Image 1: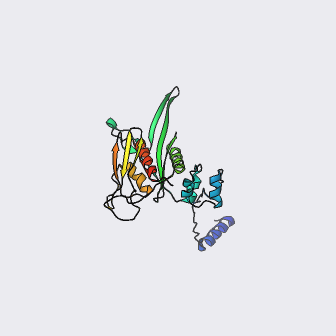
Image 2 (image 1 turned 90 degrees about the vertical axis):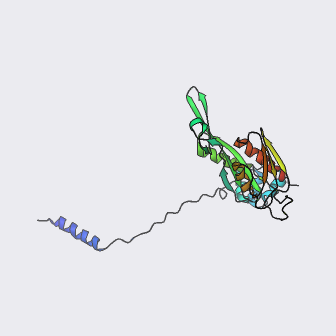
Image 3 (image 1 turned 120 degrees about the vertical axis):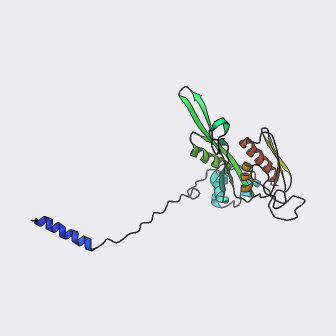
Length: 245
C-alpha cells in the first residue's frame, strides 16, 4: 500500500513529465580586450596621437621622435606579427629542429636557471617594419616582450623599382642598392624585376614580406646562419632606403 505522501509525489512527477521544459540556447561570446581604447598615454607623442593631432606614422618618423609606447603603432597602422626561428631543439649530433625560442641556462649554487629568448617582427606590408628581441624565464612572456620591442623599433622602408630590366612604377622592390652589417654578417640588397621573388634566406624573407617587398636580390657574407645578426643586418640595410628628407 502506498502512503498519501508517495501518491502525491507521483502525481507531481506526472505533471512535470507532461509539460516539457523549453530549450534555451545560451550564446557565450568571448570578451575582446582593446588595449588602445583603455590606453592612457604618458608621453607627448602618445597624447598627440590619442587626441588626433598626429594622423600618420611617417609624420612621427619624419620629426625623428622616439616611440616609447607600443599603442602608438597600434593606433596608426594595422600590424602583422611573426617570429624568427632563432633557437634549436635538442637532437642527436646537433640535428635538432629549428624553433622560435632560444634556450640558455646559467649555472648557480641553487641549480640551473633557464632563460628563453625570441625575436619578433611586426609590419603592415606597406613600408613599415620593426624587429625586437625579448628574454624571459618562460616562452610566452618573452614573445610578448619581443613584440612590444618590435613595435617601438618600427622604421620606414622606401620601396620602388630600381632595376634596369623593369620599367614599371609599382612598389615591389627597393629603389637602389643598400647594405647593412651586424657582427660578422654583411647583407647587400639589390633591386630585382617583377617575378623574381625574394632571393635571400628564409628568415630575412619574413622581414621583407612584412615590409611590403616582393622582389629582391641579395648578397651575404659572414656567419649568415646566426639568425639574430642576419636579421639585424637586414634591418640595417632597409633603414638605408627609408631616410625621410
